Image 1 (spheres, rainbow, N blue to C red):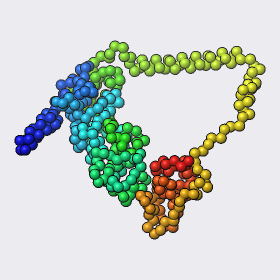
Image 2: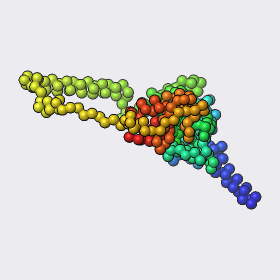
Image 3: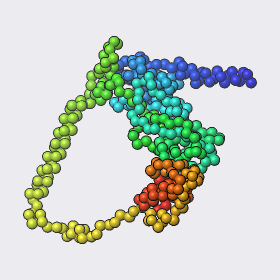
Image 4: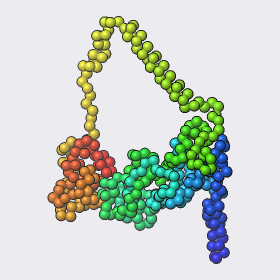
Length: 362
């Protein structure tokens, strides 16, 4: 038994720890080299500033994986590098990005998020029944409790007190309109970008970028432009000429058509157009509910506790105001989510569905 444990430990050190500790840094790639070094099965190109720059700690491991080491957050796998946009896509080697983001910190690195969104991370008992469209985070859940995360503050408040808030943190996002549920991040990469050094101009002109000299932080472009690629000025001139030519052609066609059109038709209304003008416009059907249907939904007057039954919180998810005693709340059938009666009545007349779970009643 002791020998087997020792063999297992040796195997673990050889195949998991040593490859990261003894990673080979591709620092030999030159700023003026037109053919960048590639690493990993995805053949991620590695060139300046990920070589010859002290702040960009990118490594190619002995297992042929491209990894990025952040000073305050550890090691991440590199999925893709966009040198023109100066963006890098990374993910967690253990496929639990949510766990890494709970302690994620890019201080001391040249990277920053493109956008960030405030998420609330919660843990809930497994006995709590939540909608199927709101899955848990498997790598953080266990046999007694499930882990959830949402950017919807009202939804997070409505899950209390059955659930407990673990942390509220800003999560890097690809766009300012992030998903409400964190489950969309489980199998995706994390997008970071860098602003300095600025090599976008060199990359657009298909040139390599690097320091002017070892003693200067300024950068410049190296190499000659590749044949077959036009400069940005030439491309801009061609685009302008194309737009001007298209406008001239369009104006010419309109002028010819007007010139060839008989005058008597200027004031004539085609028969088909007259028929359309006489037809009444169709009235769009609304998807909301009528007042008689809404009034059939269960209501309740709140007591001194101000807390509705079930998993509902003490805040109306529509107006985000706390309930007070003697107020009337209305429940949505089947899901039993409750809201101020005056708030949900207006909502149902327009949408006809629950604002939280979108359970359609129309």
